[in-house]
Amino acid sequence: MARSPALRRFLRHPWVLGVLGILTVFLAWWLVTSSGMVDKLFLPGPGAVWMAGSGQFQRGILVADAVASIKRVFIGFVISAGLALPIGIAMGTNRTICHFLEPLMALIRYMPAPAFIPLLIIYFGLEELPKVMLIFIGTFFFNALMIMDAVKFVPSELVETALTLGGRGLPILTRVVAPYIAPQVLDTYRINMASAWNLVIVAELVAANEGLGKRISLAQRFLRTDEIFVGLIVIGLIGLMIDLGFRFMMRRACSWAN
Image (cartoon, rainbow, N blue to C red; front, side, top):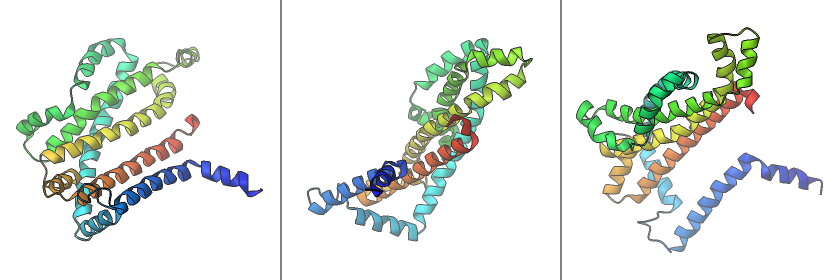
């Protein structure tokens, strides 16, 4: 009986529940493939996927593809996040800038980023730049508008109190607005990072010599379903690590918001 409350607390821990959720899916996957209900061409078993991934890793293919995709995502998203932060803050604090830029950004935001691929290839060729630009186009406007909204929702009482205490201009921005929106900004980047990964895979499917998306495209061409699963799982694991990294950063840098 003494262990029961401790056991319940252990089972309710987010990490435990998360791992149990993943293990449940893998168990269902293994049971379905082991039963022979589905052709292995359509759904390979976990063992076959592990063997395919091990083979790619030993040949250095998996690491090279992962590094290429991570590099593209990192460059494109850093440029997007770096430009979106000052523009989003400016739009949130200045009505003139907001009225000037928000309609344009709202218009472009609803244009599907993959539709820009033909133009980017025409303008920049088949090298790295069009892939980076696609990630920038697909995330910049979302980042900027979400940061703008975060600034707009800063309580007016905080700003008025700072003005009453003699604060003006830049000090209010750095000491009142910036700390308040920091958690929302990090959360914005965390959410939109998923879009960056979706876009880099689409770009690599169209034109790339290496990358996880290119590897998935080649596997599809030769009906190597196990290799497709390898690419999908690796993308998911990288995304999970990035997501956890943002959460860790938020806990350490914005401890007051937790």
